[in-house]
Image 1 (tube, rainbow, N blue to C red):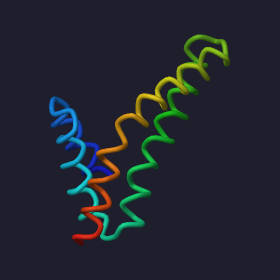
Image 2: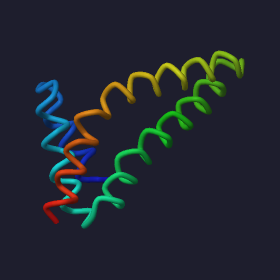
Image 3: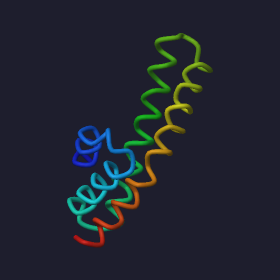
Image 4: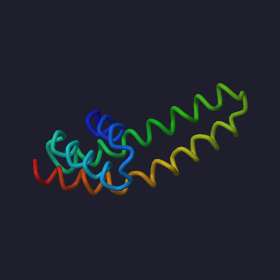
Length: 94
């Protein structure tokens, strides 16, 4: 999961190729397809929950925090396609 995050940050300027490369490397490091898929989806869920909590704490209104969390999750789901494909390929190569 750490490798995927770091490489995604470094290759953010490559729209599809960056997450694909990050997924392949992360999938190989995970050691299998199942672990690679978990490594892809765990950061999405954790980031959405954290943004929901922090958004609620900063605004004082839980509904606004929920909207922030759902918005972040929608953006992260758009990013997960190439990352998931790369993780599956990397998990099969491991």
